Length: 357
Image (tube, rainbow, N blue to C red; front, side, top):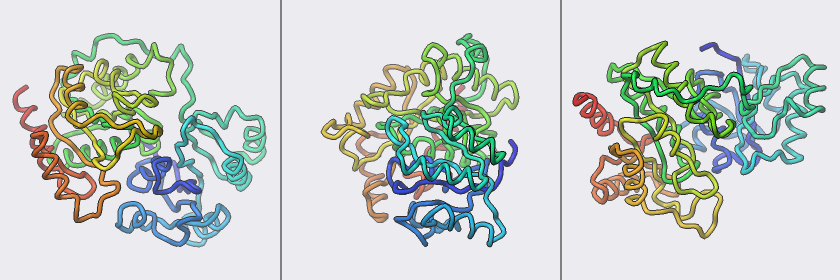
């Protein structure tokens, strides 16, 4: 995959919140861009990795676009792109977001955006982009229908071990865990690829995938299968890690059914935030208990949930091990925080299942 350039990530007002998950993913990892800064005045002057994970990343946070552009240029890392790093409910663009994006285009930055609101179809954005000679890429723009694929059943010929990372809620860390699993598998000498299912995995450089919530429903299963077939035809990896979307039971963001049905994983890892009480975006709507969600996945897929991976939001660092041990004992599965703990127990479970195939 080609390198697209140096990018600033716009996350004004939302870094280190659930709406900032696209920015978080890019700060943690991307093969598509070199991230040279994050824009959010609330954390101006701090290191993005330190704010997010307590570990410096070398990515500064700036108070505004002008400061970010000037400083990146002074450091010899002039930005070529602005990536919209916010994932607001409903994909709506506020007046302040609109003003900042227009400034970026006027400054001469290419803009990549994953919202449902399509910047390239907005007359004002389009006009200014043409005048400045820059590109707008709407990552969630629905592909032409003639380029979409139906489900064929050829997935049964794919010999790669397929692992789906599902979650007990949306915005709970499924994509981050999926990438961490790919990295851990590669360290073990296995060939592994990420099958992305959302706009952020595309921005992080996933070579195979689909943006599920940008598709007409009739083509979702076929596009999931097609991404897996492409990865098989091109690379024949030992393992494919399929990124989950939403959760089975979040009323606003139900997801996972198509991944289980069309992606036909051999096993599932369940991502879980133990201290989150209500479903993302729904106050007073309690998250279904972990054991019920595991049973639901296993009933639908007839495949095992082999591990639980934790999102440590709301925890102190020294509490993570306690939660991992307790939840692991309660559900009888290896349980780790992929950002703070070794994924070895999960990798061993994968290896055990692969040896039995």
